[in-house]
Length: 211
Image (tube, rainbow, N blue to C red):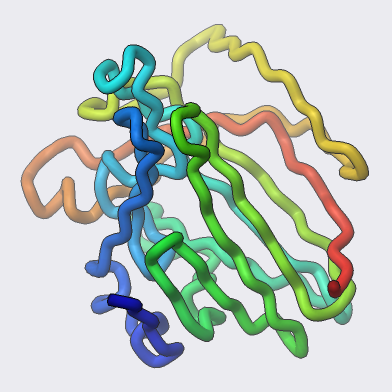
């Protein structure tokens, strides 16, 4: 059965943050999140890989902070819960959401942006695809973890992560940093540890052009 959520449903934070989607790679790995784009549980991430399929699941690619720059304005697509406030508020720009595969359509000024997540069958790899109906700049800041999917990550002194970047046509700006105090509200409701720190190496910028 096909399912499509309208803008009204997606922009209703309380409702959309409770509606979950799941994408799998057929070998024990998966991605999981909410229609609003907010991670509310420790199991919400863009890539949880099964290192010894179908077991030993680890959270690797936790989230991405994606922005569209067009018409002299910056439009955030993401949504993050920090202590006391919601950051980015990308859910307020969602026009529609379809869960299989996860696909969001955003209104960014005069532009329509389609964002789709795929997992590659049989491989520990995630693909994010962005399509815009006019020329714009896409800024992507990835956030990584390296933890068992039942646990949470906290800053590690001297943390080092081998990272190989291959991004033809993109400009990369190094900006290594720990972002602390991501909050997972469902974990909080369950009385569990609900704070996590995620690491980012910097951000890429790509030029998008209409097909």
